[in-house]
Amino acid sequence: MQLEVRPDPAEVGRARRWARSRLAGSGIEADEPLAETLILLVSELVTNAVVHTGCPAVLRLSLPGGTEGPATVRLEVADTSGRAPVPRCADGEETGGRGLALVDGLADRWGWSPEGAGKRIWCELDRCTRPQDPAAAYGSGATASATSTASAASAYEGLAFEVV
Image (cartoon, rainbow, N blue to C red):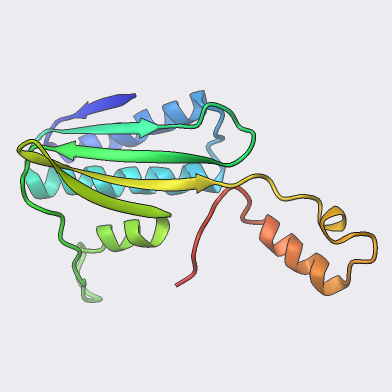
């Protein structure tokens, strides 16, 4: 599924609304961490396309078919600018320049490739399987430490992430 995006900053909000409606239709709940992260990534990549290139873009989402088991959500933004994306190191006072760093920190994988006269930037998020009940995972003799660790991990169910 895809959405054509005009080179107008107001299109970023439209892209977020469109992505939310597609997530809801695929069984991914709006309050799932995966959905919240994906909407943030949509916002960053579409903003980069419309603000930094001044060209129309196409937003594509590839969503899993069901809610059971692990699956990967793929987000792509293609534009007609031949300029490569350039990650920046933003100083504390700067209001921009953190988008690709955010993508790098939140996505499980990301990259870009030339496409015709333009390029395609993509990222993927892995939707993890739901964790088991902590008592079942550790057996009936689970220690308090193992149970609390499992409980803490379940707070982040549905989202694969890396702490940096």
